[in-house]
Length: 184
Image: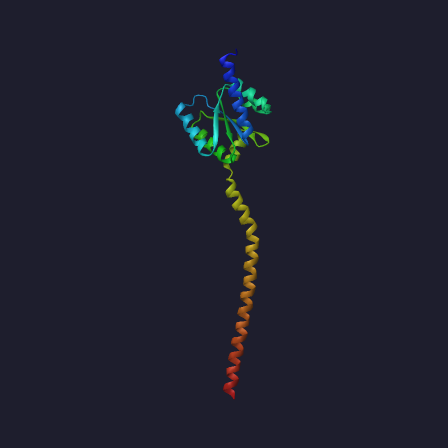
């Protein structure tokens, strides 16, 4: 009969592997000396943006990461660490983590995995400063739209000037036509 602790560790390892498989991004944080209410607040903030904070023993986390093919992340697992998994947009998650670490210095950003590459703390902070995907999409649309709008405005001005010119010719002919009628 297997020991209960071994079964528990294997269950946690399999759970981490499942999170890794389902997530597009993983971030590793250190939460030493962070109070339980603060961790709960962080979990709730992450949950609101569909991210998950998972805390496990370092040996279990290292084994799960190695088993998932993410050996390069193992170097970030030191001291009391938490794994943050997200399926959604990673910018929102990094923004929450960075804001939380600014408010509470006990939370330290270690590194992570973003879709297909390993990222460092500075990369996480850079991601947090980026606008969301919706804002970036809007900026692209505006950038693509502006030359078309400019062309429409220029063409409209040409038409307006042409109509104005025709109106001036008409007015001139009317005034010269009236003067000819007066002479007769």
